Image 1 (cartoon, rainbow, N blue to C red):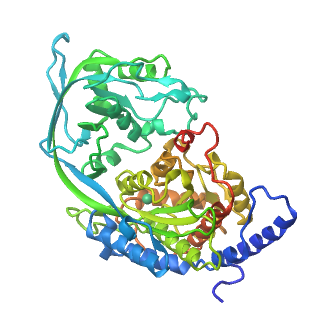
Image 2 (cartoon, protein in one colour; image 1 turned 30 degrees about the vertical axis):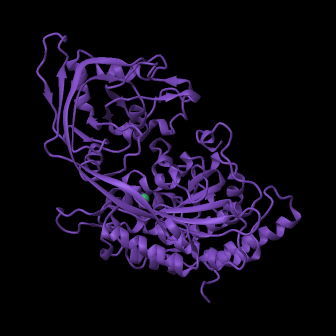
Length: 559
Ligand SMILES: [Zn+2]
């Protein structure tokens, strides 16, 4: 027998079977429930298979699966080979499993100069202030030139947000073309009725701020880094902004010559050199009445970059649907890339990314195998996409969202897996974002059947919803969320779960020590795979496509 009677699958099986039997007498809300063939397929999901994939994908031989590196490409080929072995059809370019993602690597040059120069008319004409790269600021030139020059006035635009649905506009129609915008990260937070209270919306993310500045024709945007606002310290900003970073190849969309961050203290000096008080400026930015403030200071910059165009790949397979709904689909995603190798670093410099995100790939592959072996096929087509360049700001999934295998409006749901750690028998599941969709009642019911409590997002202010691949699909309107375990595991209390989280975050997250160790308990990964299988099966078979709830920030993109 593959599983002991006490294993989670056995209890889940009983629950689901019981639920299915009950379903016959109960009025159905969503039209269907798992048929015996789906239950059998779900039962056959094996934790040993997930572990095997993780062990291989996080092996030193894969060199940390860096985007655009040999190790990353081997991971993609491995995943494509599994899809082929399962008998799934290719859904990439030209009848292959690979979807080419054209990217450009940018490395800031050491001779980059950034200085703040008082405008000619400012009193006393203070001396220019030269900033130290990495210590005071970080910058990337998104225009993909080897050298760019900037000499432009700096305008403080508060949070740099224009959000009609919250009647918020920091720009107030002021023309910022050709200017450099200084702004705060995050979103106004002193009014709980504004935005989503403490929960970060996309308007609070730094990616939005750069995009909005570029859309308005600014040449640069400088974000002021304040730890409690960004939810990570300056060392994180510095470390993730000193090496090569990948960008989408130029496609006609506007780009900034300077996409920069500066330390809070530097912003303070900048304000005071202009006779202003940064704390007051930040307080003013909390108000709807805020208006942009042009500072009597210019940014004078010479930015050099090493520019390296390259290609990476998403890996996409499909199990074609059967019948009238086969042109519609459901999608599973998990990124396979990680951070590669840091050549100059002494000691172990391979970022194996066992948890982040070989685990998600292992789950995606095992779910794909379960579907491919199910005796009955779902009505909608089921896509499995292992994406690249997540660690480079979700670039692989962004490309997938813009170039989906079928039109985005025909994709009912995306279920994403990212960093599902093998911690034992989960008693909770995290599905943040699911509550924004019309699918939520089913998610709640499935969670009940699996005996999972739904755990609300632990840190809504950190905006994790905007930090993994499902977000790229939400942006093009596809209802999407990640599935992960919560905090509470069988035989442990909440404190234990929180301590596991804390230990991972501080000692292993994005570090070479995120490695595979034998002896971990993969029950949790198998449980998340089964839960996701049940959700995806339902989404693939129910008569209606899933929608965002009315008024949700992504609903507009859907219609
Ligand atoms: Zn990840």
